[in-house]
Structure formats: structure tokens, C-alpha cells
Length: 433
Ligand SMILES: [Zn+2]
Image (cartoon, rainbow, N blue to C red; front, top):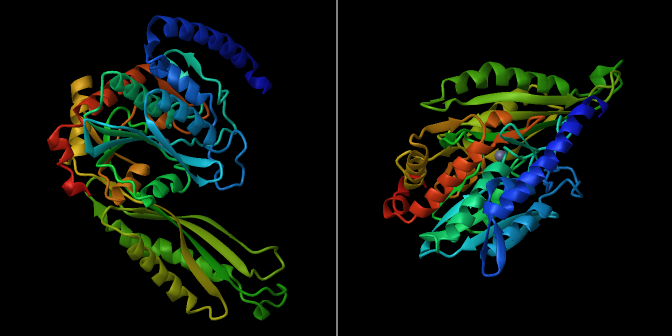
């Protein structure tokens, strides 16, 4: 775009300076030789490769040619992890949408630690920077995914490269990268459906280097109402699908919302509901025969899908009794389970102790968003979230991550791997399943 011409010129010159910096860094201190293969262990170098490899979530469209789909990034990850000595398995969840699991056998192979980082990013339309040309400026690396979640992913990979160079990890170490986290979490769900169950998991998301142990779940429903079309001059001949939907929406606001406000978690706050989208009808002079609403429900750890759906179904059924000619169908569309891993659990203490050891202080936090950690946790894998970067920079027009935080995260992830064999961490997870 013309408006960004000057910026692009600056970016190009910075990119070439960045390339020089990388070249020197590569020669002097980044690479080490092992068994004839060359391993890239510098987190900035790894992240720039990941950003330059598009993996945009197609957001339920059929698009999977570049920049859509996670296959290219998974091919790059396969090459990096194979060079590091991992046994790498790739499984397609949908065409062009693979999951990856890399395995490093540990001193103990009966227990395992999973590092997981989703491979997809959000869309790149309307970005103010070039999404796939990593630029290093003022101590930040810019590009789509730099923060969410290729930066945290690069830090995990750099930590793995560093620690496997020291010998076998104490526990078998998995690095997993799942597709489609941004819409539907079909990758993480597919991984759990495969029966794969590591002993505990650390999930890479931008948590500002804090240990995130809890977040709400998200349940999305669709309500579809079918009526009967008629000419609007004779509305009695038809059955409007919009009038009953209007009453359902009103009952959600006045009845259900009031109930949910009474349901409060000590740290996560209230359960909530929000009608996000309503569309119906075809034109102004036709009685509308269809109407759809999409509804967002934020779930507390104490709630479940069946109970929440039954509450909404009750409202739908009550309203529809007054509209005998119309039919309503309520269906769950997406579900991301809540996360509520106890701070005393082994995985939470392990991460907290590592952060405290490396950064001299550590904090437990909760998140206002949801994540794959909820999916793993619901499947019985005790999980926490940790990573560099702030959610404030995720999904933005000029997404970036602070390079200092990347380096700190490499140190923390490395420390987590080294301390993962401690039996109090391994055996201390019963309460969080
Ligand atoms: Zn993310």
C-alpha cells in the first residue's frame, strides 16, 4: 500500500541489517556441530524461520493453498526436530492440516513431559507490516505469529536444542504442534482422540512469562429456527422465524444471564452468555422462514456442556410453545474446555519453580482467553500455559515479540526440561486430572 511505502523501505534495509546480524551470529555463536548435522539453536534465528513460513488458519473456508494451512510449518518443524534427533510423527487432521508429535526418549521412559505449541496463526488481512518477512527493530521481532504463538514455539525449540545437546532429558520429552487452535481446536482434540497421554504438559502461549493455570471454557451454539414463507401483505399465511428468535434472545438476556451472574468462580469470575450474531429473512416483503443465532457461553470449571445446553434448551422450548408452526434446533458448534489446574499440582509447581529459579520471581495468573491446555486437561493431562510475549500483541496489525523475553523463555523452558524428572513433580499431579 502506498501509505506504507516509507515504512516498507525502512523495513527492507532493516531486514538486510537483520540478515547481516544473523549471519555474524550464526558464524560466531549460534550454531553448533553434532554428528555432522548443523543445529540452529538461537531463538531469534528459529523464530524468523517460523514467521517466514506461513501457516494461516483458513477459518473454516476450503482455502489451504499458501498462506493457508499448517502443512508447510509442520514440514519445517519436522526438519528441525529430525535434525535434533527426534522421532517425528505427523498425522493429518484435515487436508493440509497436520498435527506433529516429536519424541526424545528420556532417562525415564515410563513418564513424559509434553511441550505443545499450536502451528496456526490468525489471518493477515489489513496488517500494517509484512506478515511473513520477519523484521528485527528496537529489540522486537515483528511478523504474524511472532507473539501468538511462533515466538513461544521458537523458545521451546531453542530450549530443546540446548538441552538435548547436554544428553537425554530426565523424562521422555515430546514436542507437539497441533493445527487449528484459533478456530475449533480440532488439532488438540484430534491429538487427545488418538489416545496420546503424556504425564503432564506445558503449553506455549504468550503469558508474559507468568504461569497460567486457569481460564474459562468457551461453548458456542447455533439456534436455527424454521418457519414458513408468505407474502408480507398476508403475514397470517406464513410463520415468521424471526419473532420466536427475538423472544429467545430476550429470555437469554433477562432470565439466563441473571442466573449465570449468580454463578461465580473465586478467581475466574462469572459464567457469562452473549448472543453474538443473529441473521434471518430474505427480503423486506417476505415473511421470514429462517433465522439463525450464534451464542457464546463462557464456562466455569464447575460447569459442563450438558448442563449448559439443557439450560438454553429449556428457554428455547418454552418460547417455541407459543409458535406451533415453527421449529427450533439448538446445536453446539465449538467447545473449548476450561482449565483449572491446581497451583499445588506437580506441573504447576514445576513451571513456577523454573520461572522463580531463572527470573528470581514467579507469578501464577489466569487468562481471559481459552487454549489447548483446557483440551489436554479435560482429557486428563495436567497442563499449564507459559510463554514470552503479551496477549496484547497477539492478533494485532503489527504483531511483535520482545527479543529479551524470548531469551528468558528459552532459559525457563530449558530449566523445566532439566527439572522435569523430579518425582515430586511427576507424582504430584493426581489432583489436577
Ligand atoms: Zn495462541
